[in-house]
Structures are given as structure tokens and as C-alpha cells.
Image (cartoon, rainbow, N blue to C red):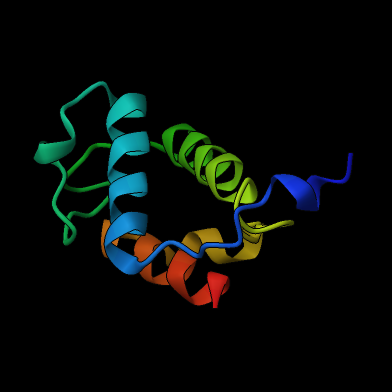
Length: 96
């Protein structure tokens, strides 16, 4: 069965994307989602290392790949994602 048949077609809104990023990051960092603010820096505020960010990217791609066929976060763009807000804005933009 083609992957497209499993895609709901509903693009998540910005608040839903924030929730996804927050939840996945909380799982990776083993903290509560409510401890993650949108303005938090991955490195300075959350002590997330590069491995944690790669895990976050993979988790977001997996989650959103179910809704948007072929959704990917480009490796070259990772260095520009410094805060939770950067990640959310990037995902929302990529989803169109």
C-alpha cells in the first residue's frame, strides 16, 4: 500500500508543532515538557548536545512523515536551529 494512503493530509498548526517539538525533546532530555519554553536555547538553556538534536530531528521527521510524505529537515539547516522557536518556525515553514 502506498505511503500516501496513510497520510491524514492535515497539516499541524504552529501550536501543534510546538507541542510535538516539546514532547519529543522532553523524552530525549528526560525532563517534563512544561520545563521547555519556546524561547529556550537548545545548548544554553536545555543542555542539549548535538546527539540530542539529531534524535530530535529524527523524531520530528518520523512524526510528521506520517502526515506529510517526505518531510525532512535538511542537515545543512541544523546549524541555524538554535532555539525551540527556531525549530518550530522551520518546521511550520517546511510544511507550507
